[in-house]
Image (tube, rainbow, N blue to C red; front, side, top):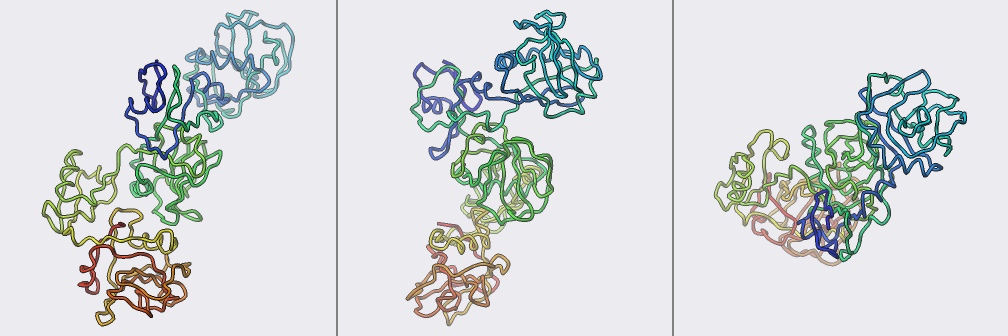
Length: 510
């Protein structure tokens, strides 16, 4: 039997399961992520109520009525026959498109119609000359329509200007269903991989996003949001899904355009800066939203996702990130993509890459070269971060070090006090606002503990580490009630002990 996995047709034995299909197609999938099962094209199209009629003068959007099932079913089964049909006539009150052949029976009665009504009319009382008629103004007359709802099967909800501009030389370029969230049935949310498939079933396991070339920094923000090829839905509405994990991390304003269904945007200013959105429905352009990409595969998953769901996501092109590779591994990785590597810092093959320039994938692809800075592997600091015990402090630490956006972050030494056995690192006063006391020490601060001065003290936001245990003061030399414990150094402790004022350390979450 034939089924589709992420739009690609595959042949499976009878009684195959969703799991079998995913494995046969080698489809991107994470067991934590949702999947969509659409039983067939016919079932899917039965839930579409809006259609876009494309013409040389623009588009017309119609919406099916709910009280003419026989006519709406006929439309769903035959609307493609109107493709390439000419405008047969146009008057001040209506336009007509056709003809096509139907099995409808005409009526001789006179009916009244309202502006925007869409009917099927049997010209000359012949079902072999069935026309689509759209009313531009209120009208009355005998239009040889079936008696069912006076032939009315839809209403115009968009494109009235286009309607008025059409002439008899124009034609229908295409008609396509407008897919919305409500077009996807509840049964499309498949939870059991052992579900038996049937001929014509469609499975979607991941979302493929094509990033725009015009918003390089904002695209990198999207890359940073993705963890283990997944994103978590933080908000769900009829119009969009929201992904808020990196809220507060702003980017400069870049490319802005209409937010069409499938668009991916980044909030670039105001409340909610740093949030990412994927749209289920068209929305108008907003200067507060940078366009960062478009969904090419998997809108079916966007339509069924709920708050808290994980979605498997891929991008094309994928992120170019050399940090955590060795210089040699980076060289091999970049050469596959015909990108020149320029080594800096420690140049040895086994040196660890801790930064790259440009950082942006889009810029690297444009320039076809990238500088990779290496250090001795043992100089990388591994840190346990107390994300659950100190959520505010953890987020602040990740922002200051920038490990929220990159796999390896940095800290700059503010000053060292050798006789006190501490090193203090620079913070960010602006980001430290609202850093309330949390996870404060009780009896002792142990060697290697990372602490942040909280808002109860003047030097809020400073980050520090101690080289020996202390029963009175925290890692930033503040009393315990002014100190938030955010993590612990796991490796590279001797590197930190040798630091001088102004030195930079490279660190990674353990």
